[in-house]
Length: 83
Image 1 (tube, one colour):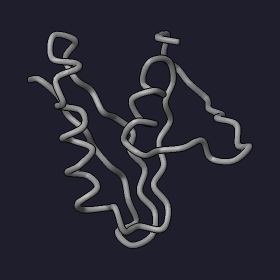
Image 2: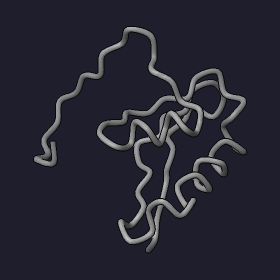
Image 3: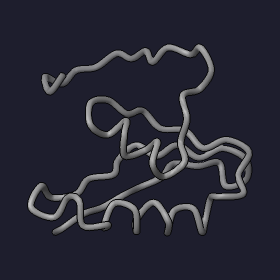
Image 4: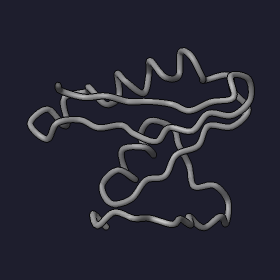
């Protein structure tokens, strides 16, 4: 697998993008942007599109049109060890 993206939505107003994963050997080749473009075809008209980004992903998401959500702070209960 080269990459994948997924969405969780109420189908009308709000969509959350939990994952956009591109194999490291294929990053920087436009695959992530292509996946985001496909997601925008389906969800671009929604009132709210949300995701959580950190590290290098922040620059990528800004390039494809996402902006910081005001003064919000990301918060979670996380059981992983990747961060």
